Length: 308
Image 1 (cartoon, one colour):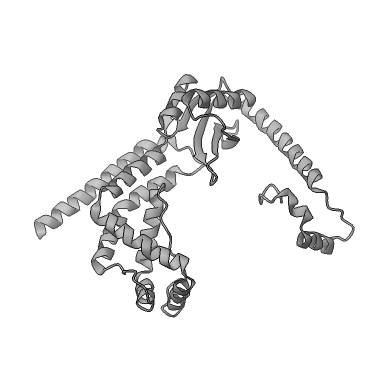
Image 2 (tube, rainbow, N blue to C red):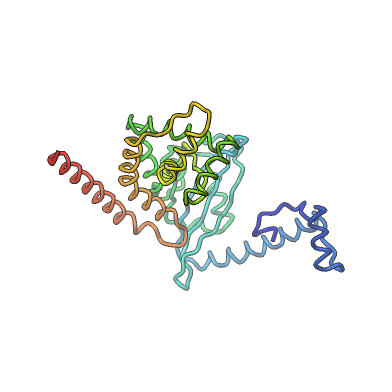
């Protein structure tokens, strides 16, 4: 339970949990927090030993690595290993998520990754490393003498984000959309009014989604949810005493056209984010699919212009 549900060790000290366990079995003696921690550590050691045995059976492995900062701006390095089992099944194991105290230079990243590879006994098995396009990540891979594979999903994110940022009309709509979503997510009165209107207008009572600056697909989700809920949102705004401007019918039409154009990129991003399927072989088909869809859109637009 502690491992699967990410529960803190202190759960065994919680009054309600202790009463619950006593109700289930009055004779059971809960372990202390320290004992529970030792039990989890023992379970981890056994799981790691078994995983290392499995890795030794794999002929080749590939790695993915990423750096990120916590809410407290602490740096972390995460490295994941991917391999095929003797039964021809794809397997994934997290080698480590380590607090990174050093400066994020290519040399320091290389040293940290090399230590993890040596710890798990896979130094000679690694065929490539997938990372984003950050220069320090690319350099660390070069210093390890490994083949670097840029993350396709990350590249898609950069491409679509740049396209969105360079479309002034859509940027204005996104700004208005963020303000609308912010109102319904921060005001209890606005939220209650939306839920009320959703209930009697036969719309599913769904929360609006706020976009996240680092993930373009959150922009897609925000616009899609707003478009689906445009009627109750407009009705709720008209019943609220505030200065938040609703989106116009023309702006919703632009949103619809944008969603249609972005849908293939959304599908490609989702497809490349899966863990249990080999993804490298999908790169060329997905790339061709995106090219084909964009060419179709351009042809349709050209046809509409000629017709008009």
